[in-house]
Length: 293
Image (cartoon, rainbow, N blue to C red; front, top):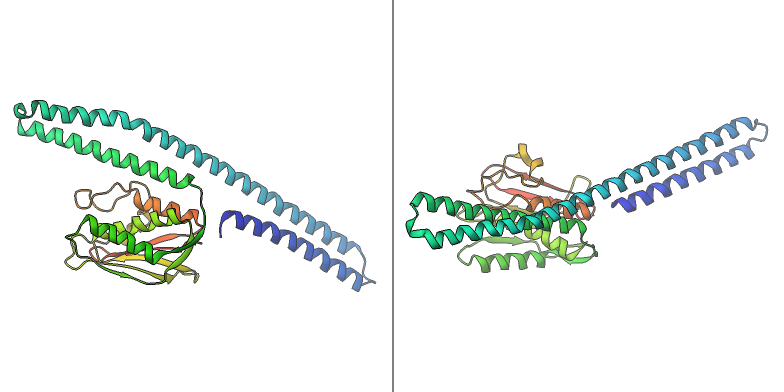
């Protein structure tokens, strides 16, 4: 349930409870004509006071939520600005490093060339981090339009793109047909793409890699979707850290990446009022689950 719907539900519940309580008290007072009116009056006052306290608590929570929302928007704007401003010096570092390699390459020692190559690689990695940070900011600010989405078709499209990029890889894909959900098409596609690309990446060292996209239910019985694989997996003790920005459980030398993808997935899922979680074991694969409402 979204925050807006939850607040509306609480307001309606409070008003209905107060109205129902007053009706019950009035009926009780009329039925017991011989009973004194003082207890009824006291009960009405207590009910009104309780109603007032609940209304104040709702107002206080709404104020806190608005303040948190404003603070998050300011942080996102700051991150976007910083990411944008970092591009110019990075381009200069990479450009001058490449120029040095081209102009003085033959005169440089092998060790000096390796240093320059590392500088270029580091600037390219920083550029990728900046791109992912900007994407993460845009995900939080993007307008949402809910409509019916065919997740099975999306998964097939994403896998087809990955196969075109790596035609030599043979990955078995098990896509449950008829997976549908309500959500923003662009954001949901981005979340599913991040999950499937992760599965594609972490199964790179398997002889028979498998990616499974399907449907299940969470602990409350709500419909949940999953993307599973038989890849590198992870230590379940660190499952909660997976969705934090820049959190990585594998070395970049083993599996490339910036550590922003799963943070993006979590933000998209939360914007839809859902939740996301993961299960896995080292060298035995991983499975990522998410709901969208």
